[in-house]
Image 1: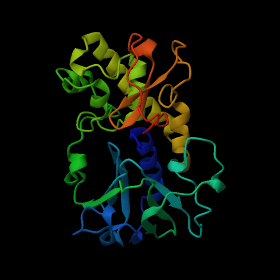
Image 2 (image 1 turned 45 degrees about the vertical axis):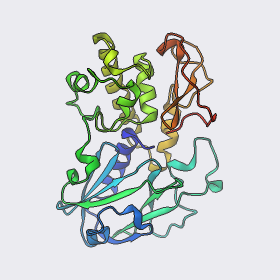
Image 3 (image 1 turned 90 degrees about the vertical axis):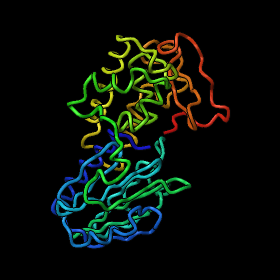
Length: 304
């Protein structure tokens, strides 16, 4: 699942490419991606892109400063840029190509569900690699007209994000800490991978109730949350769209590293079952040696 550092890098690159460019055509291959049926993306044809921004894990393309195309990448969605005249084989393999160093020529690109053409001959392709459609698009007057944007909690990447913001999310919550971090209405932009990284950096158990944290633990959590997310955003800046997942995977210290030594203590990183996916933690650093329930189906480590 794309998370705020990679989505921010995507927004930055698209902003550089698209500001001042006019939309010439929109081809919706999969109608289920369009959530505002009364305002299809085809209504943006002829308008210029004036800005590209991020809201949590969502992308916001502003057209002529009066309409917004908001894109939720969901669990499996991403984007691919195609220059004029480039075929499918020439287009860069996107972030869903996999975590291993597979040659690009042998990777089947994920299907394109929406294509937006621009007056310089380039095209933005919105893709979805899942077995069900997770990509979603809205055309709205304001980004907050999209429910997922309106409900977003504070964003740890915002320079104004404070310890008080985090405390309002954490204090009194009888909910597992990892679940709180991933709840978009509590904190914007964090998913499975970065919640693992944050909790490892803070040396906190992913399954402890948020309400059980003392002041010192909440301070560690605040420092880790801001530090991990801001550092990742800085590190992803300028990385090409098709290389963002590789960069993310390479930077992980605990997520997706089950069986490897912990970079802090040298203990063994382990998998544990969380909701419908798999996550990772260090028993020595985070749970006082307690082993959390492992996934029963032995699905691959690092589910996003």
